[in-house]
Structures are given as structure tokens and as C-alpha cells.
Length: 228
Image (cartoon, rainbow, N blue to C red):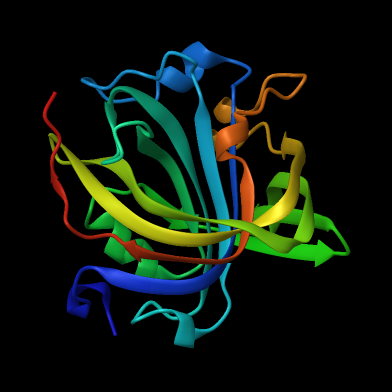
């Protein structure tokens, strides 16, 4: 099945997901990745989602895959809740060509990459690899209990030709408790993602750092032109 035969939107259930947010070491360099018409959030926050879909039964048509995507929080626009900032993808590393092609058609800068989430006791290690080389490693401490269920929409912005396109992405995620983001390392100085490396010491945006052993979402669909 090719991306052109897939109807939008696509449903994914029960993915294992580690979401992180932080302040970059070089806010100006990170902001330079934004296209004309978009501005970074006032706190210069970045975001990253590292997740794994373990089996084809968890997705309507995508099949099993792994993913790391990241980018910048935006100023002046929010998700439908009126609080969460809209976000712009700068990098999108996905193990499935079916998913990459589907995303590219919607303006996402998709390229090959693999992500693993390994949980040993209460230590969770998320590693993103490109061509087998680790480029990002995130370490967190997570509990075995579900502390809350997060639900709502995120708004992501992409660029299609000369247009900026936004889409609302509904999600429902069970959040593990306790949770602590321990470290976040960008390992490859020669990779384009390195521009988003965190400041030292790590400055976390606590409200957007969490682990969900079961996160479900619709991705993507319902896009509309972003009014500047």
C-alpha cells in the first residue's frame, strides 16, 4: 500500500511515547529554521517526540514504525485549547517509507531514521539513529503507575510550497508517574538536528516532559491554511 492510497486521517493507538521540551543552547540558530511568517515562542522552547508503534495492529494503515520529530514552539498561535503553543516541524526521522511519504505530501520534512525506547526498571532510554549511528539520546526515570490521562489537540504547522499549513491532531495519552527527564544529548555535531541541542545545564519545560506507555492519536488530517 502506498501513501497515495491512504485516506486521511490515520489512527494510531497505544504507542510508547516520550515527549520532551527544553530551551536550546543557541536560540537564534534554532529560530533561523523557521520560515518567513513564523516567530518562536517568547521562551524559545523546543519540542521533541520519540515514539514507537510496535505492531501493525496499532495503526489503521501505517503498519509498525518508529519516529522522532522535533521543532519549535510558535508565538501568536495556539492549539484549540487556547493555551498550548502551535508548533513547527524542523526535523522528522521515521523508519517507514509509507509514513514518510504520507507526511511529505503534507509538508513535513520527513527523512529516514529509527527510534528505540528501552525501559529497564525505572530507567527509560530513548535513542534516535540515522544510518545506524546514534544522534540523540534521552534518559528519563519513569514510574509504573498512570498518574493522569492527557487528552486534547496539538496544532502543528508545515510548509507546502509557498503556503503554511496547520493541522489539529487529537490525542489521548496515559501519563506515567512519577516522571523525571534526566538528560538529553544531541550526539552528532555534523547532523542538522544538532542546532536544536539543549542549553547546559538542561533547562526543561516541565509541563511538556512526560512518558506515556499508551498514547493514541490521529495523524494527520483536517489541515487548513495558516493565516499570518
